[in-house]
Image (cartoon, rainbow, N blue to C red; front, side, top):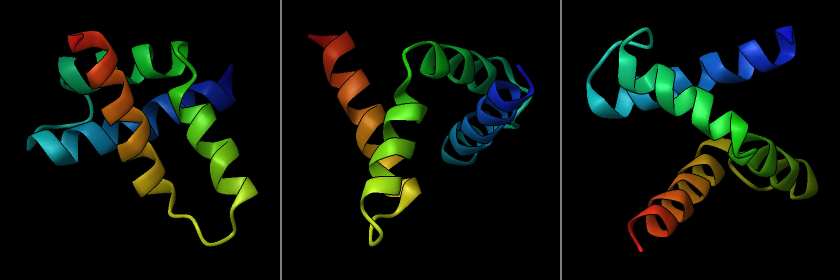
Length: 73
């Protein structure tokens, strides 16, 4: 459970940075919960482990873009 809390915190910080908010704001917290529930962060992490040259922030961007595309379709 603690490991997942850390992941949610990382995602909330990521979203807050891109939305000019704070990690404890509702949107970053919600996205952190949803993203982890959908395993987006874990998917990005696995891809990052598999590719030594990959950037974890870039992979998070890509997984979030896929989520946005899926939700809006």
